[in-house]
Image (cartoon, rainbow, N blue to C red; front, side, top):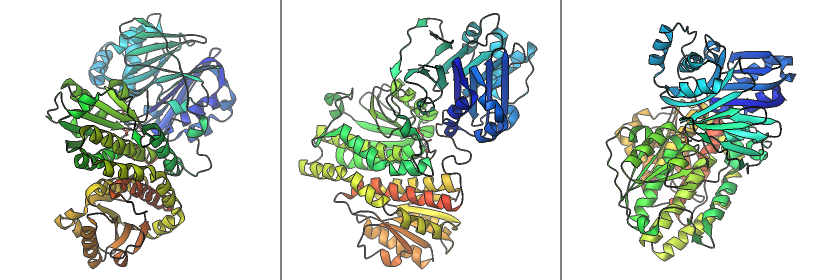
Length: 609
Ligand code: F6R
């Protein structure tokens, strides 16, 4: 949550820095600000609202060049999203500016102590406390003051610090919130996430936990919180700029929906070679995998729905007991994970605070931890014993799409890998599943070709007061995901339910003003879904059926239908249903004129609890 951008070098135009910040806007967008310096000239400007407004207000100043700068785009935690609470925050004494991502858990205690020392506070934020705390330690070295201050902070924080007394230095800190430094010919660019520096830098330095970096025009120094000097490790940036651009699509979300056949093919190319599943890079031995007693899977939001799909597939094919829970619940439960258990954490960003906390708890109980993640250098990956990379590429739209389906395909493959080792899946069946998996990109393209038709259906449904998404078995999580996609970008109330639960309450909602999306591919639960549909029709519900072509039983009861190709192995259908429901949500939101890539109140990485 919140995006930090910064610069230390010879000089760059303010417009270039604002563009950098814009690439982080998906992390939060309720207010923003900048402090920059060049030749004794300081500029500090903050605004409520989006970066576009700040850009407009800066006007001709955008052409000015600066040698040091800190920028911030905020997702409010402490204090309302108003100009006063926007970053950078300036200390009461000593003129120290701070931008912060994360939460300072002991800020009230620190604030009390600082007030006793005569510090005055203008805002409700925990971040202003950091600025004043650093000021309270400042004598003649900003890096020393920062090093002393971070030892007093509890919680999660990535910081950028600029002192008016030493404006030729930027100090950066990472502790449980991501921060990296892009290395360019023009200097160093500080950022919360890689896509922000891709167009500017050739190399990257990923700050690790509890590290402090001091950036000067031509050099960079790195320290641990304990004051030990560390070696600076630069890595080449492999991702191309185009991946972080819209490429002619109206929204990142739509572009990312359309990228799914490609990124799923990439996943297959990595993990399935000549019909052989290849997880050679896993640091979990065959002996260990064979002996797994229980599997626990945790994740948040969309990633949790991927976990839920995996539960059905894993239990069926590996015969291992699988428990799934959202990370925010898991971390506070008295669960017993032990040595022979596998703990899987799934996350697009790898920075989700609750998932990281759940993982740490499992590790304390000596479980092996496998993460499934889209960001190689993320905190989640570094904390795990082993990890499976989902090659979705940068996902910029706040609503997750391609990250979800790459998580699914990697989970399907991992499950089959495990089942092969445990000898719990017959050879022929395994072959059949793998053959069908390799055709998924082709089938997804077929669904994408129906976009116009789906948009027309969406138009008919976008005035509905609420949506129920129903599915059974492995498509119950698809119903949860369909409802989440719709509500987060269109703001229409939507619920996902197992269709069998209808009669236990939700059926009371149904009338001619409510839409019911029924996910009913021709699988072993199809007949049950057909009965549910009739019950809905009898109560005048408006039905949108997600069915296979040539469906005869359900179609007559449906008001509209979206067709997904019939698979020889229907357990893989969540990979197709997802695409249809993403397109539906996208078109409904567009009809309503919603802000698709940046829905209100949300942020891409939830780095706070
Ligand atoms: C929904 C969405 C969120 C994320 C959730 C977890 O479209 O994107 O629900 O799935 O915040 O984020 P990661 O996967 O980064 O841990």
